[in-house]
Image (tube, rainbow, N blue to C red; front, top):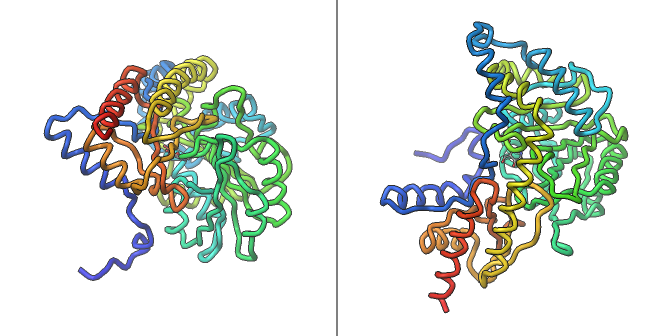
Length: 392
Ligand SMILES: Cc1ncc(COP(=O)(O)O)c(C=O)c1O
């Protein structure tokens, strides 16, 4: 067949597909694999989330569409959440849209605010689905490298300033970042927000891991600063509430922009899944206690993974500020894809090669600690150590 001509052809398949194919073959042969690939929270969601769904399951309304933005009383609950947890005060229900996850919220926002050929600046190592969305939307991705400094990934704001052109329409911020796990400190969030205001460009803030931050680090939303009107928050219930499979997230932004995104919403999903909206209603009842439980588990898992990486002669790590993963350096000449493949073959450990996260991810491998117990992470460490011993 001739090469594909549709706009999906702009997207390069991520190397994870190849690792997953190999993993499938090994599992079919009965191998016990350890999955340090998926960046999900391996904890059940808040009980109140499932209880809320059960309570409404017998009502016929749960089987119909909701209004495009979501059920009004659930949006009101989200307004309260933005105020209490993100310091975004005075939000109106009409500035919110429940979506099928943060990914859909990001696509809605991008389609509403950009024209084909617009440039979108973002940081790398990057979250690849953002880049795919830019490519689908016909935007030009402009990547700014985050460099490791004192054990964290840090953005160079002067470089962002230099990369802004007449065609720049938006800047994307992911904090805590995927795959870096690094948070943008308040001063940098302020500086970037001011920069966007100065150049009249949108700031899209992906806050998927907002609640999963390790003290003393705290997440700061640019929408809480009152500096710039053109700020869009993309939020998720997948990670902070363990509801990834329910596919529910949200978008928050200025009224006129949110109204535009409803056109995309109606075209793609009409509304977020109504049972999932009820899950959100319930989950938000338990934010405080669920968050502390999730953080406790995550911190234990992170300590276990840091011990594995510290003991390794093939990897070198650092302590992430938040999220569910660590992007470790590979200490050797292998490419990240080859390293991930070898680790899978020799140790039965699934990881994501750094090149999946763009040009600045090469030479690294993402290890997720969110999805596995301490015991399983320690077992991964034993397998890695045995293999390293064999290598000499
Ligand atoms: C930065 C970031 N944004 C968005 C998503 C997707 O979130 P959701 O499941 O809400 O679509 C992920 C998932 O890994 C992510 O890491």
